[in-house]
Length: 233
Image (cartoon, rainbow, N blue to C red; front, side, top):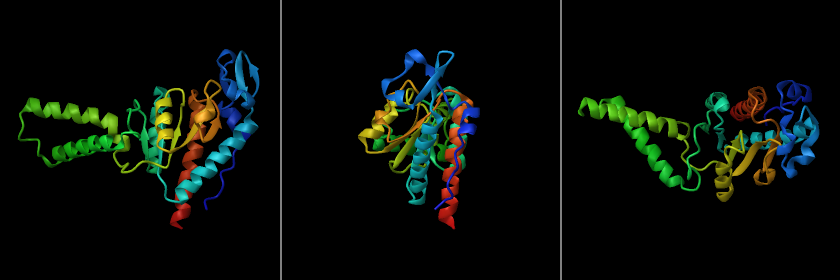
C-alpha cells in the first residue's frame, strides 16, 4: 500500500478550503459541516473536512492499488487547466470542457465518436488527407480541432471508470447523475450550496477558489502517484 497522505487543518485553512458560500445559499444537508460564519459567508468545520477527505483519499488509493480506472471532471473555467494538468500527470482520463451528455450512459456512441476522431487524426498524420482540396483539408482541420476539445481527455477511456472525481458538483451535476445511473462511485468536493446525497465520498470544501481546489487536486494527485509507485514495487 502507498504511504498515507497526512492532511493538515492549518494548510487547508491557509489554502482557503474552509470558505463556503454566502449564508443565504446554505443547503440544509451541508449544515453539519459548517462551524460558523464570517462576513456573511459560511465557514467549514475543517476537522470534519479532514475526516471526510481522508476517507476519500483512502478509497482513491485502494482503487489505484486494485488497478481500477478513475476520471477527473471539472468544467469551471478557472479550474480547467489545473485539472487537466493533474490528470495528465496521473495518466488518467479527464473532462474539463462541457460535459457531453451520454458520456457514461451512452458510452458506446461516445466511443464511436472517439474512434472517428482518432482515425481522422491518424489519417492527417499519415498524409491520407492530402488527396483532398485545400478547402476540404481546412474543413478536416476544423473538425479535428473541435473533436479534440470534446474527446481528447477521454481518448484512452476504453471502458467505464469505477469512480469519477468531480471538482464542482453544482456545475457538473449531470455527470454525477449519469455516474449514479451506471453504478460509478462519485467522489466530489461538496461546497455549502450543494446537496451531498448523490456523492459516495465527499470532500466538504470550497470548490470555487483556485487555491482551495489546487490544494485538493495536488493532494489527490500525490495519493494517486504514491499508490501507483507502490504497485510497481
